[in-house]
Image (cartoon, rainbow, N blue to C red; front, side, top):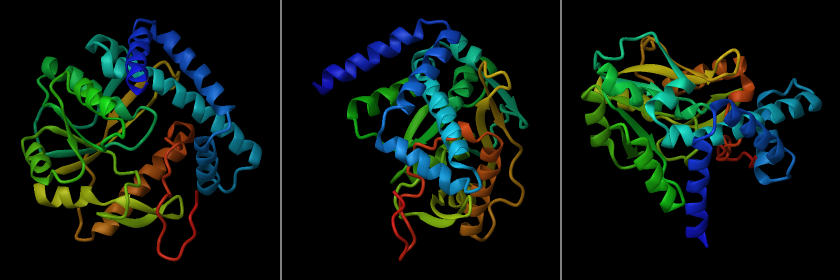
Length: 294
């Protein structure tokens, strides 16, 4: 039965791929609206996260923000058809690159990519790499529970020459890719357990956060740039913005570096709160003595 649903899901992605992009946007928003009105554990997680991070909002304002989030989340799910299966032309129609750095200079860099609904925007760099003579993209990823889709997504992300490296146990490979000047994408704003993580503030809440970026930057001598893929002002597509390197990063204080990144994420999220991935259990692990949130 699982095999049937796996192949059905791929067939649905291929069907969505042939639709005009404007249709994908509207169908995705409709899908999100439906999901928002079906009681579920993830719906509960979204509401808890929003109440924690925006305590001054009223219950009605939280409800409105949650619905906006689900509509954008639904849109992003259907947009995966283009991200994972689309041609460079289809991806470039959807995502515009806006960089403050020279993308072809092959300096060692880490591109820090927080979990907005456009989280997969780095694929646009990969799709353009050969044409623009840019380095390849390398994603540090967390293995999926479904082995079929784990392998499929590795294949799809790599179809333009990119690589996917598991987050755990591949330090030497990761450092080699950074030092070779390839784009290395890391999304640290996720709770993967307390190993190699520290509790630092995020929206005023002590939050278990991956601290690897500070260490990798020290070991590799890499610049660290923020990469955020967010909606255009008319919502017709996305802009993948790559910032100048963070100044004085890394420091000698790994915890302070990690807190600084969280503050960067928070500043960006406050500008467009509906676009963040509130479906994640961002506050899953708690400091010793604190009660569970979810």
